[in-house]
Length: 114
Image (tube, rainbow, N blue to C red; front, side, top):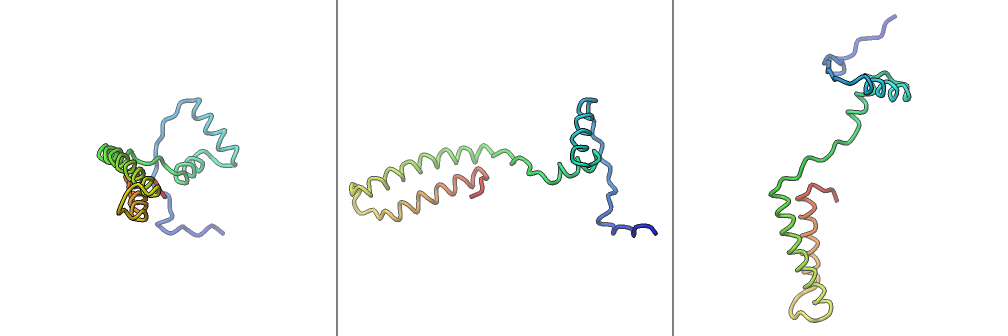
């Protein structure tokens, strides 16, 4: 009795060629063997289950991030002065909310998760 065929969407039909040095191939075989896997399944698991590095942040975002940093600093100074009672007619909760929004926007520009 043989195993039933896999559905088309589960069949692995694409081959990918990777060139390695002898040392890299030996290291790969050792690592795979240490986990009880053959090199192919080891590479597949390692490549598909790991989180990849974030893409580079565009220069425009970096510039906006730096500009927002200056704005955030000014907001923090105003908030501090307002807490000390040295800034008239400024609602500190508005300043704090603005500072929070600036920090959120700065993180978003860099693609950082909250």
